[in-house]
Image (cartoon, rainbow, N blue to C red; front, side):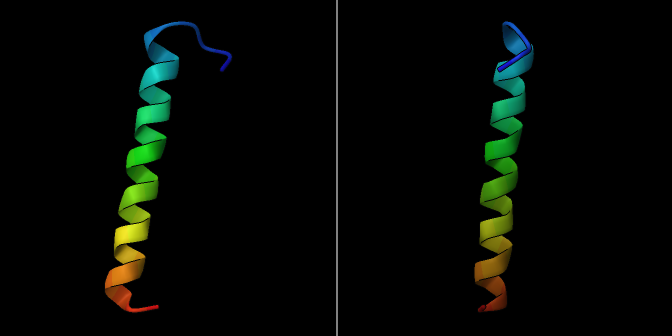
Length: 31
């Protein structure tokens, strides 16, 4: 992670949230 401290942590949390949302949407489509 390039960004020290909270910036990096927030970025990773957002990425994880995005991945979970994408996975959920994909499963709801039934693909």
